Image (cartoon, rainbow, N blue to C red; front, top):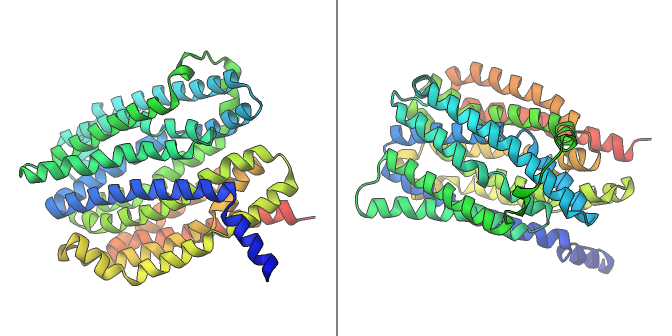
Length: 425
């Protein structure tokens, strides 16, 4: 018994655990501030306006994910690898190469949204107001820096600074709307303005932490080729996952309108805490799997990485139990219909949490990114078809069932792959 207690204590005090604590606390702090922002605007705006804002911010996240193209994983993989070898010049070249690609893609997508603003607003944002689409394009461009720079810091294992970038966007995003409320002038447009200013601040903070030295690097063609080879399947998966993971809100907005979108958006925002936990833990595991280069060490680390999932899952079940008072007290009785939706969505996210160690091992340990790319085809098809069939029948509960099915398949699929790889003969 004493031996097991000593092992447990060593795990709790390990560098991996400490980095995980840093990311968990930092990301949860940022998520809490983002949650506070949601509470403020949900209570102040009408359910209809909150639904429009949710659809717009959801599309913004899709655009940010589309511009990633797997580059964030490429930055973590190559930058951490070359820094471990003491080659800072090469690390900066990979960071600059990835940034160049992201800048070009982001600019093009923002221009497209502006060009077709009327179509985007009418068909995807549940509104006839073109300005909402203009705001989405603005947010996408400003969000380029916030969505890229933290990965350079994570590659350097500067996890605290990486999460402070998220805090830098979440804090003003909560404060500015609160000030507008105090003066009685909070509107949908001013909510978008607060978001844009927050993204700008986060970008400035990000460059303050990373520095601008990497921007002077001159990546050669081979840098882009290597990024494409490593990030290709991940990029495909990121594009498909970003669309399939956000189809719920966009399809609700298109099929059942802004009010239903507003009701569903509260559970969706709350469930983002689970995604924060998942991404935080994945960020801690990724550079370590990249550095091992030894199958047996990766195998032991994979087992070790599963232990923190136990308290996380217990916490999620507790959250389900207290969902009713939690939502109605914070958001008001007008969102009481969101309670059972949140409970169902939280249950649907539990298999996703179980897949974090296995998916991270596939990408950074096995370096078999194509397996994640293959799954993405099933993912988007399943999410779209299930939502298409179930939203007309079950409304806001349709997407929760879609996520439950896909996340369960992901957990089973990814663990079968890693078990065969690390324990197979």
